[in-house]
Amino acid sequence: MAQRSPEEKRDVMRYYDELAGSYNSLYGDEQDLKIDLALGVVRLKDSDLVLDVGCGTGLLFDHIAESVGQIVGLDLSSGILGVASERSRELRERCKVSIIRADADFMPFREEAFDVIFAFTLLQNLPDPAVTVKEITRVAQTDSTIVITGLKKSFSEERIKSILGGRGIEVSITRTVNQAQDLMAVCRKVHEAKDK
Image 1 (cartoon, rainbow, N blue to C red):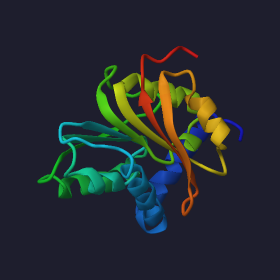
Image 2 (tube, rainbow, N blue to C red; image 1 turned 180 degrees about the horizontal axis):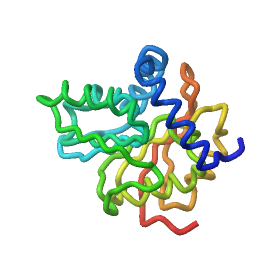
Image 3 (cartoon, rainbow, N blue to C red; image 1 turned 180 degrees about the vertical axis):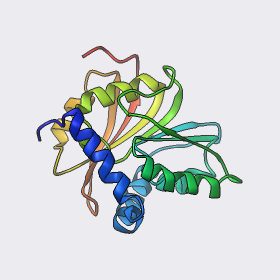
């Protein structure tokens, strides 16, 4: 797959702005499946600060609100964040959820801020997935868990491993999500990312 240009990133943002109202009905079941599979192998603690990069409509929030201390949802699409913001208000009694509009390649967070990071179906929407993974690694604490999925039509298992390799990430599980269109990698940050 050819890498996306920055202009294409803006096109993707506009696409998700327009799709915001119907995203859950179109893709909600598939996203819920990926989330359930990931949560089957990830241990969450009530003290965890969780980052959902490319959070979309915030479907993950419902799954983890009662299991973690705080969730930060980040996405570039203002339309889709409107839906996520409404979902976060509904969860106010169960968990603190913060919504941030920002680019996944340039996140406004300090280094080693998050205990657990999820990036569901994000990488194929960005110009250089390796840059995105480097930024995810930057904001992950050492020994934190990172879950990344990518569409099978965009990524082979070898390509996912290549993108993750050499960035201070140890991949413990890479599997195809059979009922979904994704590959999933469950990783652990083992040390500071190397510049690559």
